[in-house]
Length: 168
Image (cartoon, rainbow, N blue to C red; front, top):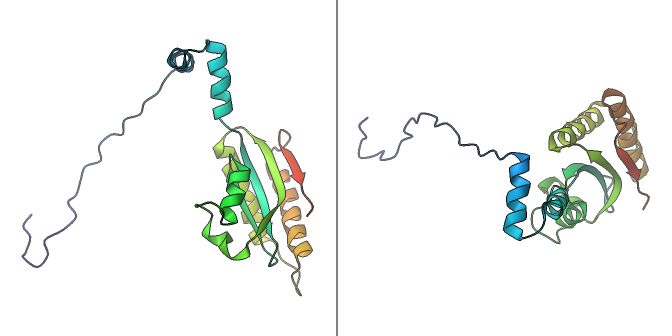
């Protein structure tokens, strides 16, 4: 491939190199963690469980405008501080409604995939549902999300989930 003097840079087609995946057997991981930290295997396993935080889906409500935001995280207090601008990393969509308050917390997801699917369904159903005409107040917006959540429960198995609504 020859380049002209005007255009020095072009994208060179690359062949996709296979990704290296490092898999460690569960028994090996706990044994190596135990030997590295000097703790017995049972304590190392307990530490590992603490590190693998549970996924949760949250609904936050703006205290300034009638808006809500649905998201997924493993550390809700940290995430709320990000949304409120106290820490870096909050979602751009939530920057205009600060400060935000917790409205609903759904806990007990097995993994990130399950939590993300739940979040996606909740957002999608909320978007597709018709809204009442008129002045949108915070109660109207929260009721809309609550009805959407009840529809999500009819589509997915939520028997193992803990759903807590918080009043502010």
